[in-house]
Length: 161
Image (cartoon, rainbow, N blue to C red; front, side, top):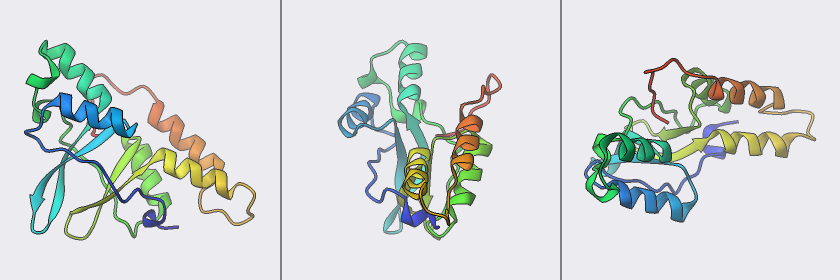
């Protein structure tokens, strides 16, 4: 199975110059915990960072300023991992596991954002496939991914969501 079969195609995004209060509102309204940070690029948008609800909380705490006074650029993770729509779900799971991520931006051949794949998307597919004999994603693969993603990370080691 390919990533394009499971990815969310309509993705809320923000810009590096946006402030954290707007991103927090977007996350609250959409009921999600991560937003790709993008900039325009030749008819599309390229991912330049990722920001999570945790990043917002930690920025408010460490910077001691209100969210409306903190630009996304100071809180976002810049080291972004991604996958392509034609990648297999197994390839995406490996990226999630290796980098302890919950979500991956999906980018095309021009590095333009075309979707978002979450570990939850993959888990839902595994649940749908549970009764089938031929499975693209097994329960064991999901369990391994969740274990890897939630393992304690070495202090100071950061990778974008």
